[in-house]
Length: 210
Image (cartoon, rainbow, N blue to C red):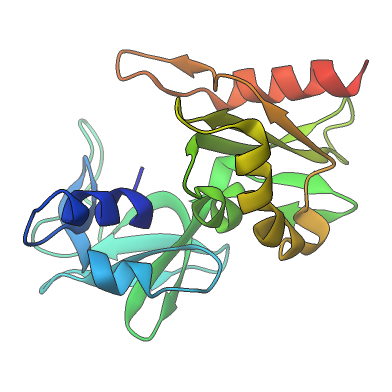
């Protein structure tokens, strides 16, 4: 997961001279990088992760997936054939020479026939007081799910304070605006305790069915 602008600002406020978000994959390190002040200045949807580092070529395929190639990018997978580029699994676009991530391809859900990519919106929802946030689809019909926001508050933030800070961001979300905001501990899984989107979707579905 790319580093949020909020976390980078906190690092600089703590006294570090420079704070960078470095976008990388197991198959490629690094892909791109962006400094804290540049990232904080980004006001558009999506998560900007900077320009590709020298030698790395980035393109977006017809499905909106980011593909990369270069001397520091894996040339093949174990027992696989050589490949000219690596599909990242990330939906992205290129803006002014920088990579802007719009979420994982597999995380997309449908609502009212619209594709909703959570990664477009989650970066702008990580306002002060939010420890973690997931936008997921809830409901029994996989072809028409309702957006639900699962918010884990920071220990020192009240629910009312977080709702107030989220309000202007929610207004910008259009059809992806959640029908419900759930304050709960974000489910996590795996040895790295990453947010478990499937478990969060199950939580959202349970709440919507009540």
